[in-house]
Image (cartoon, rainbow over all chains, first blue to last red; front, top):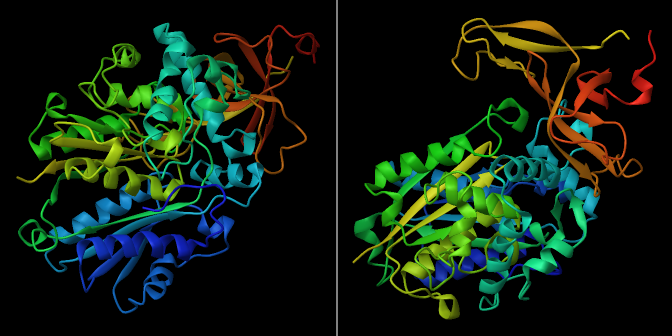
Length: 375
Length: 116
């Protein structure tokens, strides 16, 4: 994982090679059988596509089969899913999955336009709505429907900023208060600046290998107990219910079933808190709180690193940073580091099973991964 | 005032109405057919865009809402005005429909009183 930064000065290839080389060296592998690259906006922002072959070339690994995977902000999570499925085919043994995004050096309207490519062009983007705006409409409906205050929801970014203080790779290592969230500038009412993740550059990568072979490469392998993807209508207004992401529920229900666990067995969580409201909704949609009560977990300190359900222990999308196509790979890598007991100052105690949830668009694509420590 | 209309798609099986066309009903996979609806409804939720995408820079701040069309689909569209008077549940009427991009106005606003 590279640090997430709005001033990296690095190219897409620089970022990807840095993260991929770390993963390759850490695993001590001398070959890779295939390469998956998650990315959302390189075509629009950098005028660069064909990232599969581009990154294989940059790594000096041309020849391997390569796949660029795009699922909006869930691109990284979907790339890991694609890699995990390839592994199950038995045709390949060592698979490198990375995610990369470069968002710095562009104006806010440019990046905003790029992100809106995840929505319907003709009926939604054409109104001038932004992704912050779509999430703001969910937040307004959520607060109205469940009588939950902005103060309660603002605890989510506060938690993430607190956790990021100990993460040397985090974009925002600065403590914030609920009051600072509520007094930060409005971006799309009711969401304010500190409700929203920022724009940053970053890349993350990990190595997948079959369970019996993984011990050749590490003393503390982590098992992907489940890897699922679900989709929903592309647009928010096409759904009967705005305050739940059906794709999260579908992907996570299936993942719990495959892993043979229930939410009660989970003791580590990385959720897609691109906006404060999404963090709260994820706690509910993943089965840890009833609808409208997600903020109670925050009130009770359960999501803190020393709580029962440590959440976004490295700072989450809000504070670690959200280089969109890479975020899913960061999340899964961070869960793996926790389970390997290699999380440094971010380490939680007693984590055996961790869940990572990655959202693309306005909940139209969701990837869920369940990771388990291998004893 | 002549009410502008919205084209949407109705499931012949479960009655779900959708602003977007799909090959089958997104709820029950029944067959869908095109229909038109009067452009009146109420605000389900809304926001005020203060940091717009390219091409909208000169228009901000502006209001975008999800609107529950009366006996019809939910749609997304702009709402005229600053947003100060917009509330969840406010009645709105369609003001313009540019190839499916909708702009509404509050039904109680003065500009709506003109009878055509």
